[in-house]
Length: 121
Image (cartoon, rainbow, N blue to C red; front, side, top):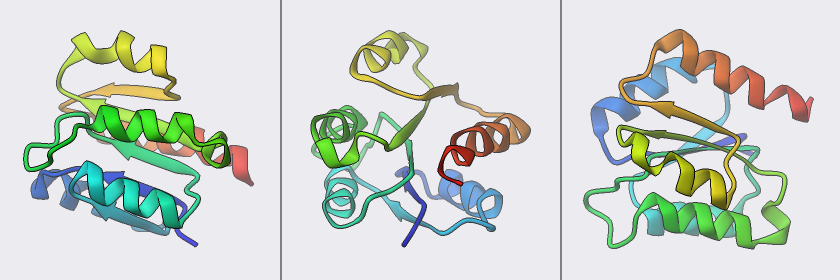
């Protein structure tokens, strides 16, 4: 079972995450619809979520709302990574476990992931 779902539509950023997450079992989604389809099939420990999904009819907000409305996903940790700091308070109001502003520091990214996963050891 994958531990993480990475929701990111930028191929270069997805490739970076891929290199940083090599030791983890994860899957990727490029749209909100694809992410929600994964979430309906699998319980993920962590979701790494971009809010602005250009080729999607929905944004990362719809993924976040979906996660927080599903009782079976209550333990899912959500790390939002966005270039728009103005959206942070809205995400916090819905319920997130971490926030990072793009561009992200590699070490800060790894630290966030490691902080979120030990809760499942």
